[in-house]
Length: 107
Length: 121
Image (cartoon, rainbow over all chains, first blue to last red; front, top):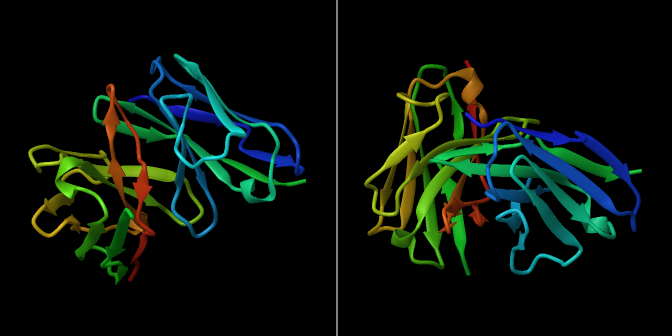
């Protein structure tokens, strides 16, 4: 099974900061990666799919990059609504795995 | 608009059964694979099961294989998860989710609000 890791596990940042979250896969997954945002008590929300495609309605300050085993989610200018936990997800042959999550909180 | 509404959660004793439902609207249900994903309190997301758009194939996480059964009724736009032999470690919020697949990649684009299952004596 493909394992996913994320770093950092927690990130403290201020409004306006540029934030980068890294997701690594235990083997190459091409560009088969998605990113989700989850706020407490809410369902996850899709942000990015296929590593770099922005989901409709998601602000352009979110972007994704990477391929193979290393991927990044970047928020160019952190907004108050962006404080949340972020998960990456891979898909491979009917198997779905999420990363452990990165919590972005207020510095 | 797309809506997914789970129901059926609650408190259940270890070893007992529970059936979750997910009623969907706003899209052509029988065109999409549907999934269950769970999240234990304070923990991350864990994929549980998938059923093909026509019900022809089903896959499960190892942690629930042999105990959980996913099914669907396309005539009623409803997804189900039958959970048997429940354990304390099955305690979680259970989400149903729609999964489109594009160019070989599948991802979760719409989620329900979740239903809490608590397994406790």
